[in-house]
Length: 554
Image (cartoon, rainbow, N blue to C red; front, side, top):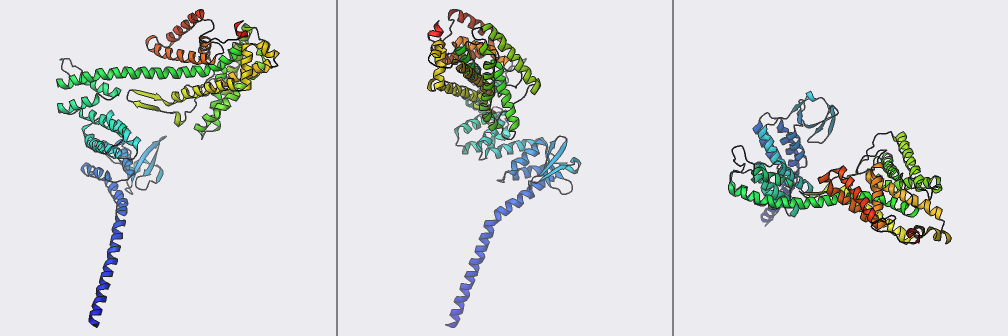
């Protein structure tokens, strides 16, 4: 009995010891991969110091198996010739040339070494075979990324330089991709690769896939297939492929014309929005006071320079500075407008020629003032990140963000101005003065201050227009002169003092100008529009939308 009890205890002890050993072994195995990945990456990267190209090719393939964000950095640096190793420590580093100095960053640790001497480093050499392998592995790595933008960029890069080596990575990515936009980009890149195949059936499949793609690069690729040499032989030897390419080109060119129409329409609307911002303030002052303000362009210029100054004051907050510049430009230009009205224009009411000459003189003074403060050189206003770039609808149509935001901004300004005129007491007074100044004065409205505030309002809106224009062009003393004539044309064409007429006039002239430019040129297009406006005013002197009222009709 005693011996049996001893045997049972020994058996339990052995089982317990086995369980403990198994637990420790399992824990070690669970911890092993992370330790192995960290150490193996350093070991594998260190092998790039080898002189053997075959060994480097093996290492590149091994690197692509790591789920590590350092891998694409290494491969990209190796492809671009920026990967080196320290002759003494054998550490792999990425060298970057900055203002004549070489800055080194260690690949494994990510530590920046700072400025180093290039002769202390040895470049990791590659040949053409390795370059092809690197491009393929980089594409495969990026196509597997969790970042949608990175996957899209990888597909677009392959489309720019299609090669057979990308095909496995594209097929693998297509089998896993769920996002439709990215699938279309991958399929197009795959078709571009197959277009260079030696198999006519694959080339025909590629052409058929490209027929549904809206991309200018596809048009170029298909056109190259139909090029004939001096002997009359086509670049594409197969007749079926050529026929499919010709048929696809007809559809693609038709589609390109449609998208070109929408692109021209977008640019026309954006130009109309700029004209609207520049002219809407002039429409108010001209409509209420009948003043031909030749200094209106300088109010736009002051708004643009205000944007430049705000950015100088907020260099670390460029995006926010543009938002701050909108009310600041409105106040600065508005105060200048009130000062001009109180100091000069109020003494010249009823004498339009003298008003024109006086405001023209003021415009010259303001231009010289700006030249004295900021010098005659143009100033560049930095565009915030959220205004940079373009919205790529497809390969044939892209809409720039800065013009898209200006369209929205112009509509918001117009809406806010309409609400001000219709729903505020000041707007009521201004409309009363516009329709019948004498009656408004007899009802107790201080028409002089209405004139001053109206002139300030119109000038302030011109300053806001300057903020928008600073994102499209350089800021200079002559900025406003480029828009003053166009502003007057918009106001006269749409109807003096009528905001809806100003909107329709600005959009009409902007769209017509953009559609006419490809046929006539920019200068001749403006001349033709000016002639059209003159002829139109001969038929309708009050413009498209004439104001009604006793004062206006007399």
